[in-house]
Amino acid sequence: MFTLIDFEESPGHSPFRKWYDSLDPQGSAKVSVALERIELGIHSRIKWFRGIGEYVLDWGPGYRIYLMTDGTNLIVLLGGGTKSGQQKDIEQALIYAEVYKARRKT
View 1 (cartoon, one colour):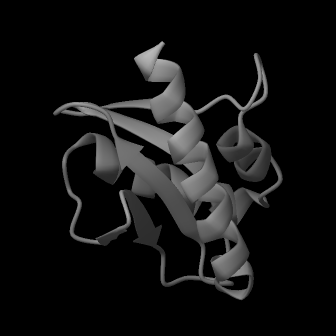
View 2 (view 1 turned 180 degrees about the vertical axis):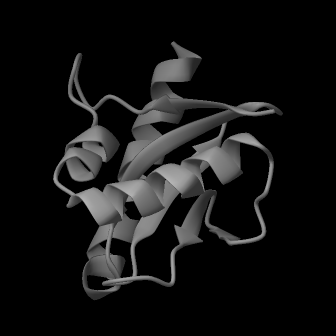
C-alpha cells in the first residue's frame, strides 16, 4: 500500500486538488479509480522521467496525473492535466517537485 498526499504550493493550496475539483463527474470518477490503483501499487500506467511520474488515462481528453515518490511508500500528487496541456503541466510538475524536495531538506 502507498500513501498519497497532495503537494501544497502554499498552505491549503494544492494544485492537484484544484485540478481534480474542476473535473466533471465522469472525469473525477476516472481519476479516483486511477488514484486507488496508485495506492494499491498498480503503477504500470506511470511513465517515470526526470524524477517525476506521469499516470496516463486513455479516456476523454487524455487525463494525466503528475506525481513523485518520497521514500518507499509515499506518493506526492503534484498536479493534473490533459494531453493538450501536457508539456506545460510537466514543466510545472517538475518545479513543484523541486520545491517539495527543497522543503524536505529544511
